[in-house]
Structures are given as structure tokens and as C-alpha cells.
Image (tube, rainbow, N blue to C red; front, side, top):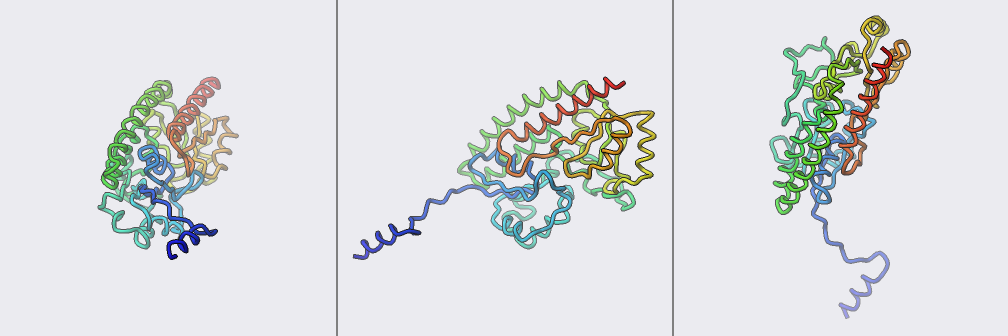
Amino acid sequence: MKRLLLLLLLAAPGWALPAPAWADVKVFACEPEWAALAREVGGDRVTAFSATSDRQNPHYIRARPSLIARIRRADLVICSGGGLEVGWLPILMRRGAPARVQPGQIGYMMAADHVTVLEKPAVVDRSLGDVHPEGNPHVHLDARNIITLAQEVAKRLSQIDAANATTYYQRTADFVRTWETAMADWQARAKPLNGMPVVTHHKTWSYLLDWLGLKEVASLEVRPGIPPTPAHLSSLLASMRTQPAAAILRTPFDPPDAAAWLSEKTGITVLVPPYTVTKDAGPGALRAMFEKTVAQLAAAHSASNARQ
């Protein structure tokens, strides 16, 4: 009788046997590029969430309750580090992050800790602008760093989920092989760009410029994090008329006005490379990001040569 009653209850609307739990690794990424990299390495063994989107400046994010709830469930936290998230990540770590993803644990990964960091200041002085004491944190824009960081993600996932370690390492080997082929193509196509003069809005692009050999000749910001002023822009205009740049680079989240003004006055092309991938980007998105960036730079270089 009891068995019959149980079967009737399960057959009733709203009743069902619980589905078997899917033992995935939950990744909390501060930026979309790290969520995308986790998906490349982990495949369907990971669920990756990005706290920011491609249209948000990762410097300026609020530690919302929804993010606290997300990080509370994380098995692995991946962020740029280098002070990029200093205004909000420590709050999330204090209020929601479990012990397994605290600093010093295998579940806590800051990308800047695993690659060579550019622009480390000899002294830190607020008069120099928004300078990170740890150096420039935008490490994902050097394609060479992606290989190192994919391997680090694989190592951590393999320790968190040892039963699937072989899968993680195999996926990483496949990813690195494809990435190296793509990178060789990008570097060959970018070879004519060596020494190409560019104006940047912010120090966002330093790793891209270093990797491809481009030369930053000016910045739209007065100093890092200090918005352009009329006097500064007038000075830039004078210098561009005698020694013009080939392109002006800004991110999708940088204010467009200063770049548009300088372009209108000089004819220099404004480029808005992707900077990162979309929030829920799947496999291949990181490669597409670099592909589009290299293509934009090559087109700007050709257009600059045609103007001269």
C-alpha cells in the first residue's frame, strides 16, 4: 500500500525523481576572457561565470549581492589580478568566498601572478595618475600569455577535479597546438606593423603593443586614469600634425569623444578592437578576438601608408 501511494505521488504533477547531479567545476571569473579560457580547458566539465561583460570597465564594478552569491558557490576563482579588481574583488572574497578559493588555495588564481608583468612603477605616486603598484594588469592581450595561463588553469582544474585530469590536460594540449598555429599566422601578418605609431586612450593596450612591436607615441589621457583636457588634446593635435600616428586605439568602454575629436582634426583612424570576448563566449572566441584585432591593425596600417 505504501509503495502504491509513493508511485501515485511521483506520478502526480510537480513530482519527479531527482536527476543525478552533474559534477561540474564552478568557475567564477572576474573578466570574460578568463571564463572563456576556462571553457576552452574544461569543456562540459566546467560551468564558468563572468562577473563583468565586454562593455564594462573591470576597474569599476560594484560588489553586488548577486556576485557574492555566485562566488559563494565557486570552486575556482580566476581574475586578472595586478590590482585590476582591487575596488570590488576583496569585498566579494570577504563576504562570500569559501575557504577553497581564498588566496593561497588552489582555487584562487590571479593571471598576473603567472606571466611577466609590464610597467611596474619604480615609485607609486598619486600625481602619476591611476598607476597600479603591481604593474599593468591587462595581461590577456599578449597572445603568448594565453598559452601559459591555459596550462595553469588545466593544472588547477586537475587538482580540483582529479577524476577528469586527463581530459583537462588533453583539451589544453589541443588548444595550445591550435593556438600556436594561429599565433604564428598573426605574427607573420603583423610583421609589417613593427614600429607602427599609435595613440592610446589608456594603458589598456600595452601587452598587445609589446607583443606585436607597435609604438605608443601618445595617450589621450593626461595621465593614466585622468581624462583628456582641452589643453592636453590641443597639445596632441599639434604633435600629430608634425608626426602623425597610424591609428588611435580605444576600448569599447572608453568614452569616444576625445578619440573622435582627434580623428576628425587629423584624419587618423580610430580603432575599437574587441579588448575581450562576450560574457558567455564559447570555444574559439579568444582566437576570434585576436584575429579581429590583428585584422583591424593591418587595415589601419595600410590606410596610414596610403595617406602619406
